[in-house]
Image 1 (cartoon, rainbow, N blue to C red):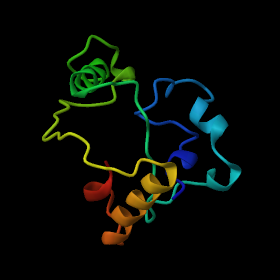
Image 2 (cartoon, one colour):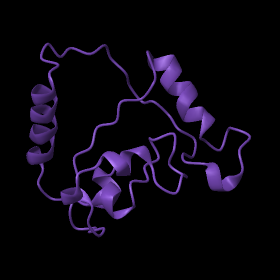
Image 3 (tube, rainbow, N blue to C red):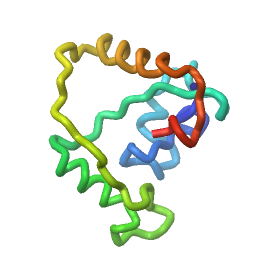
Image 4 (cartoon, rainbow, N blue to C red):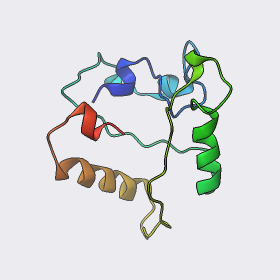
Amino acid sequence: KNGVGGYGGKSNWAKDRDEKITQLYRLMPPAVKAPWDAKQFELRMTDLPCANIDEFQEWLQFYSNKAELPAEMLRFIDPTIVESKDVQVSGRTEADIVRYLLNYAMAERAYDEMSKNC
């Protein structure tokens, strides 16, 4: 709750993270634009322009310490994909995805930034 809204719509997963006003922030409803609260979590899903695991790995590497970017543009340190599987979900509607996210969040209600911050 109030995560990306509290950061002015800046997300490491958005290409325009370093813009003054991001597309994500412009599209966010006012109700989620609130101060950061480290005791709460937010549910967020980002659709990246990657068609497969190789493209995703390239995307991570582009913004990592393995790339030739200035330090202020880096987003990830030594990104590693531990495991990847083909999607096994049959329900892919917006409502289905929201239900999956809520089930994940409600399985463990306590929030800890170090262990539940992906």
